[in-house]
Length: 639
Image (tube, rainbow, N blue to C red; front, side, top):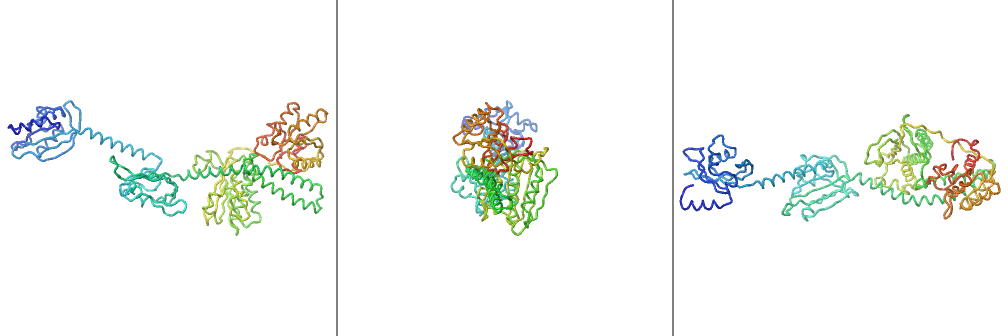
């Protein structure tokens, strides 16, 4: 560095600065030869090189270290320039430096080199880039769609799930206005529902989450979505854009509706079960008296015809209570292994006989067996076929298809993975309006003037009680398809059907226990008509006393018929258990208006020889008593 008072002052100042400074010269007469005139202490501290070491590095010519080669080129070029480069300290450690070259004086060829350690800045920048990369990987992996925009609402990022939900890739939508790509419809009215971007930009506040919108994808598919719009702010809280987070909740909403439907049906089921039980007791008196009176008439009598019509009406009323019991928790199916071939053929033949609808069956011979209550599943098929024929008043085509199905984890079908028999009943009628589809299985919901609204609700309950599932698919103007799944048994033997029941007379003493006076009277009349001697008890305690008194007189009862439940008193199970401890050979028949109790499904497990369901006819009563008193003479089958 030239000497003189001015230069000494500048040198003294440079020695005290924290900025690394070097003065070098590139003589005009010898271009390329860089002479180091001065380095300040800050340069030595930052780089680890003193003046002599710096000079030595420049003197290596083409063999200079890379950094000094760049510096030499900048000096020789003779222009002001700033850049960033990786610099090697004398001890071999690397650091990043910001380099400024101040233009040399033309006369002397001198220029000033300034170094500034920017390693910290470079580390922060590298960390920001790493964070951005991690964020991009995270957003690409999450199960929600994410779209970000700039302050004008133009798309600058879409993650993988977002691409799937909108049906377009990032490269196709980048730079386009979000409102033109993200099309929303109101879930109820189906009217266009603009995305509230402006509200977010204007208020700087998040909007949502909102779940009453449908997203229309690029290929026209509607998805029920939940979404949230939030502003993007920088470190100074300045608005830089907006982020949209959204997810497909179509299946979630469907399952929530299914749960709500189940809860509604369970609430009504409690009421229905209680009503059906009480009504069954009343029907026992009505049906029993009618069947008893009809058996005392000659077939050619006019009274016989009247009673037969009355009995038919009572049986229809019994069927209605059975529907209520099936719909309620009391409708536990009594299952047997069977195949659906005959049930499908019989139901289609029975319902469609005389109608103007054509039926096409597709039931493979290798259809898996199922374990079902045949009467209940026949009721389901009948309900579906009746609905189809009523929907096509002018005639049409009904297709019934059955097939084996192995289900995996299906979000839209709330069933455990496994083997199922799938049965579909399709018609080409007018279809079901969309606003009715969500309520189609609700109890007492009907659009028919004479409908009860129990048919499909009962069908739903039956299939559910069989660990299956039923659903509907309908398109207005095209038709409706009901699909039901029942657990399948890929290999199982099929039991034979029970025979027809007849009236069986007999002899013996019977003790009848029931808390209803009407039931005791009519059942007593029927038993007397059949040839039995009858005694009555209103509850279990009275039945035990009468039974013990008869045993003491050595005038035993041949059979005890006991009601399962006695409000405030001893029921059949407790009474029979006490008697069995003293009289192990006692023969007991349990009866009830309910079917949900395990005693009725497995009477032998609780010490009962048989069960009979209220209301019952005299024929049914005669058969069940004969099967207990003289099982060798009773036909095979059951009540």
